[in-house]
Image (cartoon, rainbow, N blue to C red; front, side, top):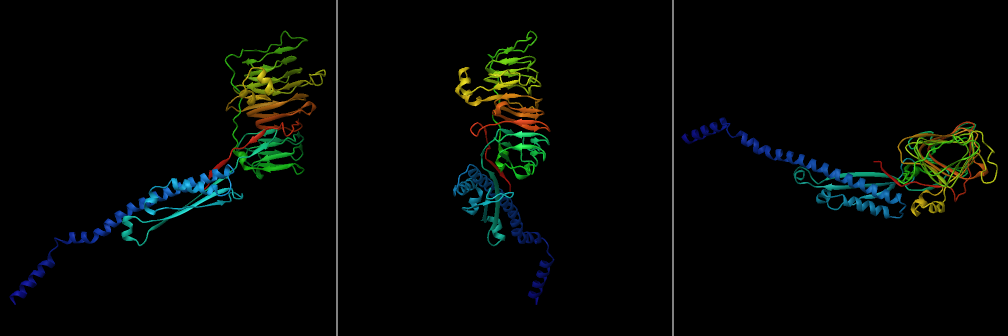
Length: 444
């Protein structure tokens, strides 16, 4: 009885004791606490692996799209995409082993097979989460990159402004005859806008997409749609004047019934015709303005005008029609560009001559938009290329070229207003090409 009483007393003391409860509770909760902390570490690693896999999928899709943009065919793009995917993996392979992506083609914005898709998944097993979960965690990613292959199109009237409507406009009552073609690289709706009552003879119009063209119902030419032209980047600009070029100026004060003879050089004050004028063969660097609108006979054969610092072009005689007197001088405004052989003869290098042959007027590399005008009832005899990548050209009057010669216009925008007449004839061999660069865009 004594022993039983002592045992009962001991049990009562143990029941009343609280000194070891915290330790016992901690011991019971410790696995859950450690597991929760570990789970948060694993969650961060899952996120990092997902980010790594997504980056790898993006790079794979872009690499595959570039392969197709440069017109590689067959399975080349799949191998390139898979290699680029694998090259961007590190942590993923450590926890999931080798991951093989699925590479395919997609249809972007109504196109057919104009994108590359990359999808991949991996089952990742991490140390802490393995204690609380059966099996690994599946992580999946996908990516898509659209592409446009580089293409070459020919046209003698080209506009280079992007992301704008009305970059090539022909107003009601205006006439444009240019069977050598028209291109506007803007992909915005209404980039090419031709009035229903305009008269046009254009064999081919090339536009970025169907929405970018607003044509009259009677258009009978060919419409070519190519989104890659939106990637075109102009890289042709006028040369800078050499330090050896002499300064020149225009002065008609002492010219009464005769003709002013101008020489190549730098015209800081611009060139504004005020009397009958001839230009000797060579390059004329012009600041401020090149104004060829005076009632006079103007002639220059083998000449190139370089517009500097946003100089303004005004072209088109306003009343000297049929005063050229026949022979070599055929009309009021008579200009032809230097050929390759003429530039070589003038002492320029082979590289320079190949770059600038057949260019009549060109602007330097300026970001300044400049408004140019082709004006009046001009009976022009001009040939060659007008290359004004930041120039907005407005044709206000009769700009017909005499004898149907070939002249070509590349400008920021071109607006042939109502009542104006723009006429040029270039053969397929003469017409300049616009080569659009391939483009790739990550879309998802």
